[in-house]
Image (cartoon, rainbow, N blue to C red; front, side, top):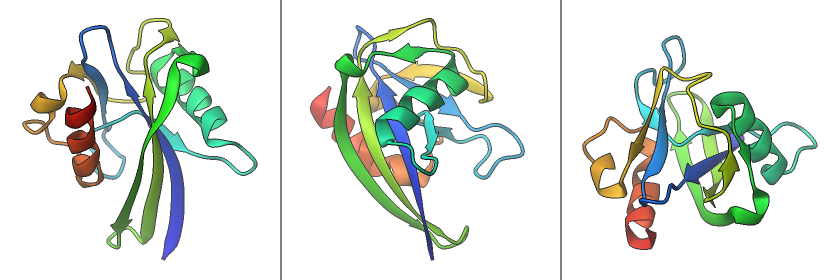
Length: 134
């Protein structure tokens, strides 16, 4: 099984809400909510990938000084033929107003509200970690 390395961000606003993005039509798991981020390209550090992905997906520039490594997620997706490895970062500083550039929609939610949303399966443990942290 192939290993897929991706990064994700939990952008946290001043009210303790986290930004979620809805996967667009035509992609795997379309319609489900996830934490924004994406694949780490060859030769790229996870932090550089995070900066690039959030610029591409949300049109924001994150402040790495206001970013911290938070959680490491490992989840098999045998139905898709890969195993997901995902470092997750808490991001509390950025420039610009997040907007859905590559997603169907974005929404701010408190961790307790995420259980009622149609989240991707791999993010279940991450939501539990956010509840304990925020």
